[in-house]
Amino acid sequence: MKADPNTMPHPDLIAHHRQTCRDIIRLAPGIWTAVGYAAANVHLIDGSRTATIIDTTESTEAAANVLAEFRKLTDKPVGRIIYTHSHRDHISGASVFTDGSVPIIAGHLFSSDLVGVNESRISANKALDRRTQAQFGIGLTDEERISLGCGPGDRPMKGLGAGHIEPTERIAKDKVVDLDGVAAKLILSPGETPDHMVVWLPEQGILFCGDNWYHAFPNLYAIRGTPYRDFATWAQSLGQLASLQSEVLSPGHTRPVFGAAAVQEVLTTTRAAILHVMRATADGMDEGLSVDDIAASISLPEALASKPWLKELYGKLSWSVRAFAAGTLGWYDGNPTHLGTISSIDRARHMAHLAGGATALMEAAVVAEDLEWRLELCDHLMALGKPVQELKAETLVQLAESEINATARNTYLWEANRLRKAVQ
Ligand SMILES: [Zn+2]
Image (cartoon, rainbow, N blue to C red):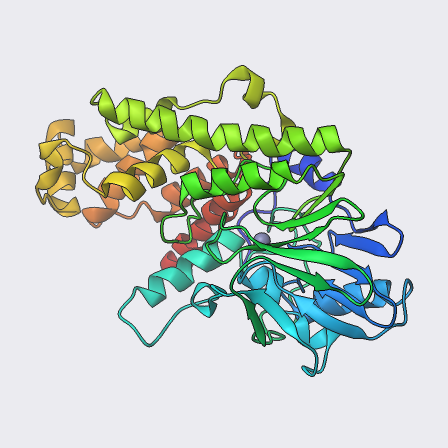
């Protein structure tokens, strides 16, 4: 399905993805990171008799492309695989690298619950499935779909999710290990997920940080639907990672950072950005502001906003405000108006009455210049059974074109397609 042949990504997104073209980047002798072959990176550490693979991409096709490149660098068999965390874009190509006879190592909180829907408990599995497809643009064309670290038309999807192998070793506390001649420390580092485990090579000064850092504002809330990602814990982990004073930082998405000063800067400013959102949200709530108003006005101080790695290409400040408010005080925002239960259809009826009828409301929606407001009016009209699916779809496509956030863009386009399919 295709949203619109003329839907161009925002120039900032295009520029960002020019930096993540396929590349095998040498970090040190015998140590490489494959960037741009999939949504997530793969790392290779060549040991004396075997190789270590860190993370495995989201599809067997992407993993096979990476392995073909790695085979030009070493012919040693893969001796172990390490997962930095359980998001499926990191764990779904393992079977390409091993037949399953080698150790698969992860943190002790590694959870397949995060991988997809869970049929064994009461949860909104259909909603999660739909929203996951929307966030990642599953079903959009290759040209339309954009992921962090993998640009339009550059994400092999064959064997999506097909090559996962469950961990055979779960690390319960930080552990020094020998990666066949390469000394490493596995460090539990809760951040984007509670189960994160990073890999630190002290002799080379290389840190593989998983998704606790990448070239984008951190995804403190994923719109596909995630439990609260503990902001304070993520910030604390970034402080601990900075204290390692690494020379090279190789993330789970986007290109590595070289040089101790540069690594310090990206880690400490990202930590500062998270703390800023926490402080601004808490202060706003203390002052009695609504979460809507805090979300609408939040910005980073100029010293942080000017950093290219804090652009909202993946996480978003306004979503983070809402996530922090809900994660700390729950859904109630302190305004007793919101303790009630006006249904969307009743609200729509009231709005239509105020507008002078549903036809007048429709006319207002058609001419509304504020795209987000037009969407709200469309929702009222749809609640009243009015055929405005195409108007809402067009509006979503317009929003997608001006959107720098990859997951918001995918979602706008995906939902536009869904509306158009519904009226066919
Ligand atoms: Zn990831």
